[in-house]
Length: 96
Image 1: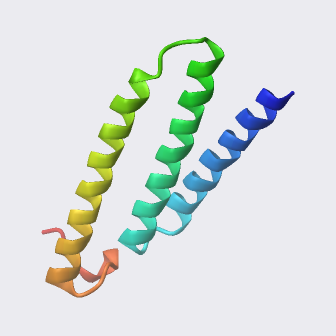
Image 2 (image 1 turned 120 degrees about the vertical axis):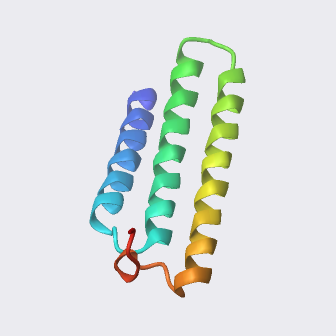
Image 3 (image 1 turned 180 degrees about the vertical axis):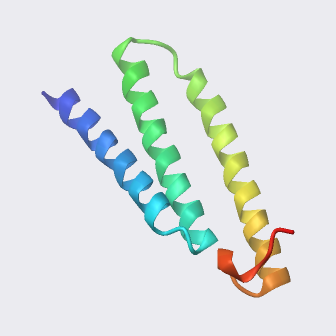
């Protein structure tokens, strides 16, 4: 029963992250925060799954390395966008 509650919590975290990602798409910072929340919920689901099958946790380190690289790349894009355009609105710049 405890494991089912934890899986339900991870699923709710994943759904909230996706709802924020879809609904708040005007600001880049909110989009990046929701993506990190989704990555955190996927990390928790991996922890639950790997502990359930008694597998080693080395794959979690690889996942964390890639998620940190993704966060650093998103933060660098945010900083360069704020330096060039002055804000993080998606509507304030043209892609062409």
